[in-house]
Length: 127
Image (cartoon, rainbow, N blue to C red; front, side, top):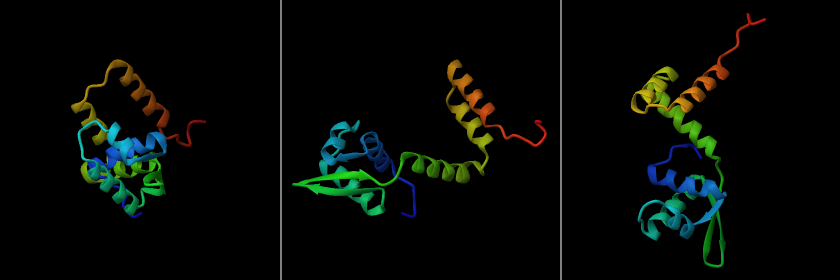
């Protein structure tokens, strides 16, 4: 698999499969939050298998799809691409834009501050 980018529907399907680590077309179709044809989901899952995100086995007449890629791999890959293309690799620009479009509640704001504090690089002079 060369490209870890997923289109909107592919990502939506993968999120359903990530929950159970394996899934069928019917189960994904039943649990997706919009009305789509069976063939749309089947084609999407077949394409995900072709791209190397999923594998499948056939049980009687049912395709059982299994994960080949962890959610964190896709999340990191897609976010890195977004960071590079839209924010010139600047985490500061990304966070600033995020906070401009979505106001964090006080609890979330405190957790974000703690995450930043915990991730600060340590220099040689903290002895």
